[in-house]
Image (cartoon, rainbow, N blue to C red; front, top):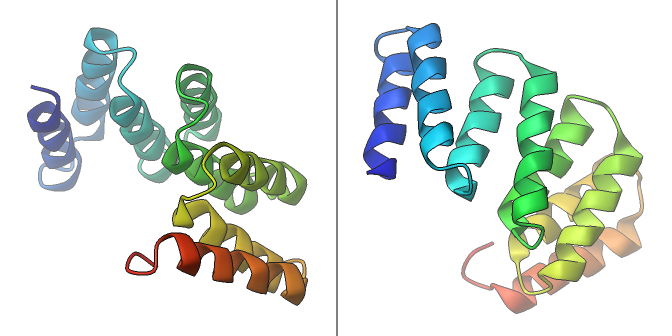
Amino acid sequence: HVPARLQYSSFLAEAKQNLPAAAAELKRILADHPGDKEVRHEYAFFLKNRMADYDGAEEQFREGLKLYPDCPKLRNNYALFLKNVRKDLKGAVDQFEEAIRRSPTSALPRVNYALLLETQMKDFKKSEEQYRAALLHEPGNV
């Protein structure tokens, strides 16, 4: 059962502070479920946040997007990775815009794109457009 196994890997990392065991468990889950976007997403986050393995994390994000190019959560989080870790604003903008193009009613990439436009690019007009679109599509989820 994937959710239980993911929770167990989190337990190993957090409660037991056993990162190698958590990494091994995540690799086993990924081997058993290579097409599961949540597993790939969790593994990418683990590599980035717990192991500081940025190349490995990026590989997982990219592989996940090959399998699920329309997943707004995965594309949004890859955009945030590019912005925050790689300091690649152009790459982040491209990913946010692609997420919005592929999933125009998803608020998550719109809100994060609006924040980038506001804080990094000082493009307040575009930022407001994205905030308004996010509120229009998911008024209770923003």
